[in-house]
Length: 270
Ligand code: ZN
Image (cartoon, rainbow, N blue to C red):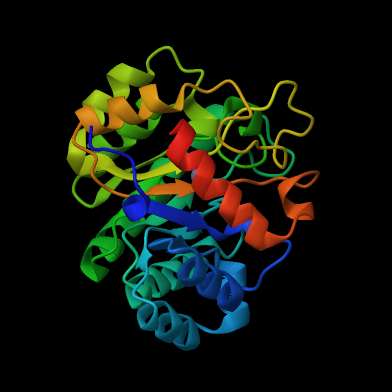
């Protein structure tokens, strides 16, 4: 493992989404010496794709992922995902993060929902491959199965990858997978080719909200260096992207303070 420095640190813009526009986040990264950024598409739409691409390039930032595609439960999922692939291509994003969606409205059929995810991904994968955009399936913590993603373990995501072939991999977000007894073995199984993104935060005890109460690295119970070690042993050499949804804490703070703390915690705890 190389000595920790900031060269692989990336800001997922969700971390400052309450405070900053995408333009401000891009400038913030440049000001704080953060080399990577992962924009969310609502902020991208607000700024405009061309302006965002220009600003990101002007500051020499790597786009470590575009958040997000997926949500196959939405009626416009196909056109929306095609747009997302196009945006990821335009930005030169290292992957398009796929949050696959949960149960359709009124349904209890989780088995069918999971089959449908595979069908939708099978339809999109060739288009993404043709555009040169790797699709990163992000397994979400099972508490989010009904409403956000019915792919809930790395093993399940990798089974999908194997069925779908080239150009499809996974995003490993510690918040969603840290508890998994098979985590080490599944990271090793993924290997360099399928490990497309690594998302960092921490698990607060107690967690007060299943979506928007993530902790800053060092404020929770996740053994971050150990998981990073597993990623690197498997060949992952990409960015470490900090993604913190935090209604009660980090979204309330001065975003320049958030980035300063994030850098310091990254060096100390990751
Ligand atoms: Zn994530």
